[in-house]
Amino acid sequence: MNVSSRETTQYVSHFILMGFPSRPEMQLLYFGLFSVAYALTLMGNTAIVCAVRWDQRLHTPMYILLGNFSLLEICYVTTTVPNMLANFLSTSKSISFVSCFAQFYFFFSLGCDEGFYLCIMAFDRYLAICRPLHYPRIMTKQLYTGLVIFGWSCGFVLFLTPVVLISQLPFCGPNIIDHFMCDPVPLMTLSCSEDTTTQLIYSTFNAIFMFGTFLFILCSYALVILAVLKMSSAASKRKAFSTCASHLTVVTLFFGSVTVMYISPGSGRPVEVQKIVALFYSVITPLCNPLIYSLRNKEMKNALRKVFGTEIPVHKT
Image (cartoon, rainbow, N blue to C red; front, side, top):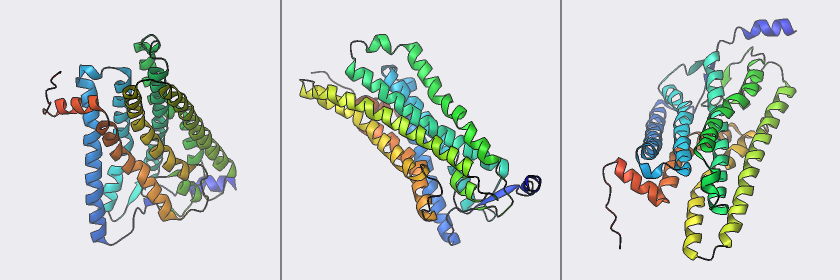
């Protein structure tokens, strides 16, 4: 049985990504809408990266982490959206076996890195607000450089195991994925044999990662809120809450949608609901993040004006 499974696996050389089946004119409309969303995502996040890179006032751990997070968002959204746009104009909508699992690996590794970066940013806010006098001594260049490297690399290391396990499942047909990307949930349902061990390992991995990172962020901000409430100055309280509000909004968007999708794969949710939730965290959230971080941050707004050549002089009174 094992020999025949391995032999039949050879015949699945590609998958068909159904995406959003509809009339040709609707496919063109989707192509236009998502092209605009992708372009705005690239421009917004690139603007933040450039602002952090070129404005000396933003060469602090908080903004360096934000710049890396925006660069991560650019990589994250690029793993799926260009292929989705190509499929809107394609009749075959096929993706090779290797390309499918490469997309799976990079998309979810970068998503995992996002979770770690949100933890690192929460830790930075905790130190800045709860340990302000010790912050320069603790958050040294060596430490935040190590945190940046950790944030970029950890997801690629950890997500190697789930990808290898799922890629070893026997795929002997059908090869149609009712999704716009190579998502692990529909991939596992296409396997010829139901491997409950792989599903359990995958679900456990997701649960530990999401609950662990979310609990870390929750504890960090619980301590931050307690510290802010003890502040005597109303202006200091407003500034602290304003700084944390942007990060908490991104945390809610990211963990809310991802938790709904991946804690229990194969839980029987309608396919269309799965696509909409996946669309939210893979396209909408990266589009919103630059707005969330820039609109509530005076230093970032000034840096962006400088990048675009529209800096408004500030007169001290």
